[in-house]
Length: 165
Image: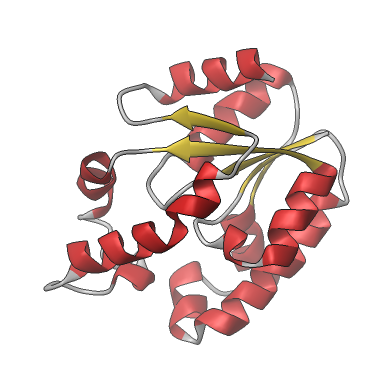
């Protein structure tokens, strides 16, 4: 059974995922890193080139990750937008969502301007974050397990997830 970590950008999927994988003695896959590696381009470059094309590459990377067994996968913040990705994650593992308050997300994301192209530049960056989060919140809540990462260290969050599985 694979473990898929979902949640909005800045929720801690990669950091928590690495720690969870180490704790469970499983390989770790960061889906964004896999997309960048396989395409030879950075995530910001890919997204600026067109979000639809990026989502196709992301789905292909998810299919490759899902073909493996007993891995921890940090999904991209928008991976679950595609119904086929949600179905694949559920069919091949357990979907864990990292829930995070808007205020904490903003404190983590506000300085990542070049790294988070979907948020765009100032002014209006926080409003775009709110709109994106509002549009995805129900996808994150529909996970098998929902864990808050707002007031917790990544190590504690990983430990809580491990004890819930």
